[in-house]
Amino acid sequence: MKKIIFLSHCILNTASKVVLYNQREIDAEEALRLKFVSTALNNGIQIVQLPCPEFTLYGSRRWGHVSNQFDNPFFRQHSRKILEPFIQQLKEYLSNDSFQVLGIVGIDGSPSCGVDYTCEADWYGSFEGRQGLQETLDSARLVNRKGIFMDVLTEMLKEEHLDGKVIVRSLYAEEPDKCLDLVR
Image 1 (cartoon, rainbow, N blue to C red):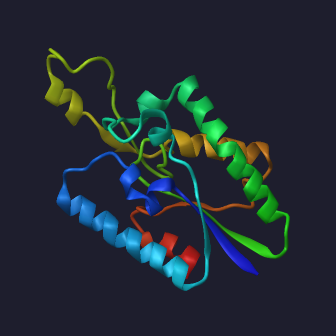
Image 2 (image 1 turned 180 degrees about the horizontal axis):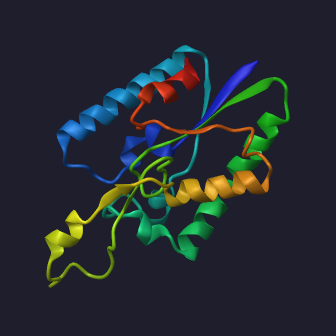
Image 3 (image 1 turned 90 degrees about the vertical axis):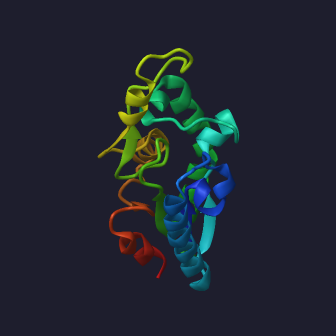
């Protein structure tokens, strides 16, 4: 039986991420990412890379966003559109006894792919001439809810009656071994 896992895009392609400037944060993410991917590959697990809704809408030169900015009908519709082929793949793998779907892995803190936590704030408008810009930026906080892409994915899993058949976990959860256990 072949084991398969679906991963948020940036787990395999960090070039799709918003540019980070905190080297300690980059190093910690990279160490966990490499450990997870190498464990999966060493255990013969097949990897399906989900698309990145932020990259496919805004490209590589985008600013960082918060989930509030993505919580709109346009971003949700785009997420549905790019997830549809992956839902079909998931259904096919689940219908065949030759495969075992281990789960879907997201990225906590992401405004799109957060599973347990996402980043939110009341960001909008132009930065030019804005009073209190630093206070606005500092207002970003982690909250206990899904990012918008993962929220749409969860809705689609429920619609297809797959929600009880697929585990959705986060790679950067407070307990990284929970996610690593999926691929061990």
